[in-house]
Length: 305
Image (cartoon, rainbow, N blue to C red):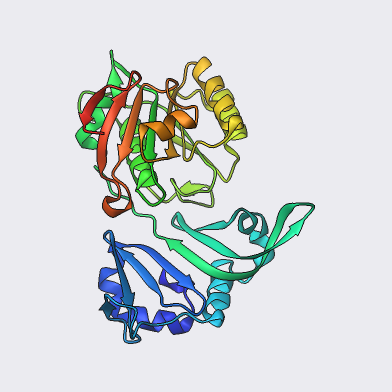
């Protein structure tokens, strides 16, 4: 993972490797200190690779660091990643996601490209097996899985939880039987496919369609793989909602995520009432932890929302 950083920044990480697994984010901003989010806390690094709590004496990122890191991230072919960059992020091997910001070049009122990249947000994907087990029984009713929506602010661990729930539904857990799950992995963050094969454990009964738009992918999987459950990350606009309704009418159960922090956010997005379970996470300070679960009528059935 550290191989995507510039050689200068990489040297500062050599003494930090023992703590690499705990890193959630690495933020690079041209001319500013390198910022780490480690186990929910913000840290800086000095030039020797030591953690420090203040920006004074911190390692500063240069424009050259950004350019060199982008070359590594894109494997020296920016053109091959042009479509992803235009959306503001790049997904790399392992399911890690690199957010990109800078000066855009507009074409007919739309983003044609990001001409000058000045900021990178490297979000490290972590697989935490078992994080969905404590409340997994709450996602079943009358012997069948519930349509479930995971709600979290950005960086709150929703993709990590989604990955583990897919594994649990696929493999089965205790008295709950396993089932066929179709994962439409639009950005290849959940399964982290490499040459079509998931690198993350998403369960033995899970079929993955990677790097495919959600709306098309759901239709393809329902037609070809006959899943009992369809899963995907980040429910978006009207097209996604229409695809979800089509999947529901076909008899599939839905497991997905959405950005938000409270029930009002869910209602504003038009998602309330469509799902049977709403799993709210605590946010980036306690990434992946569940605050509470509501049923379709807004009643708390786990924790406290």
